[in-house]
Length: 117
Image (cartoon, rainbow, N blue to C red; front, side, top):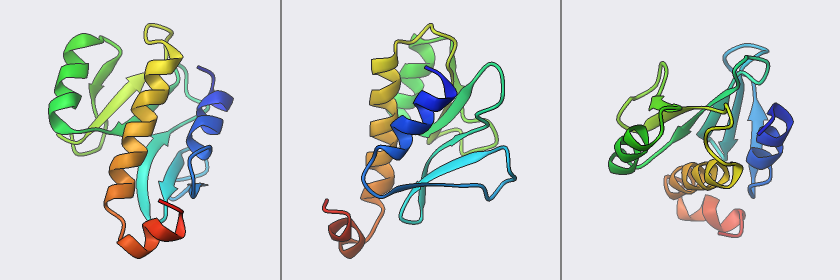
């Protein structure tokens, strides 16, 4: 997955927006006011940090060497994934969707309804 594909995948979620609260090189993808992905899209190798259920986060770290505890994030709830080709794009997209869904679940009912969810 390339940086452009990662950006399109994140922004393809309903209500998703990209911002730069940590500087011009770090893309933060949010739904409403909840972050679900974080990446320096110019960094090589490309990495993305994603929210994850704590039990699944641990299982994914054991399954894939390209997944580690979230860098500079709550290590229980975030994974940092190196997009080095060792994990297929469909699995990455599933992790992005799961992260989005976790962020969406933290929104108020009214905000979710505004997004059609």
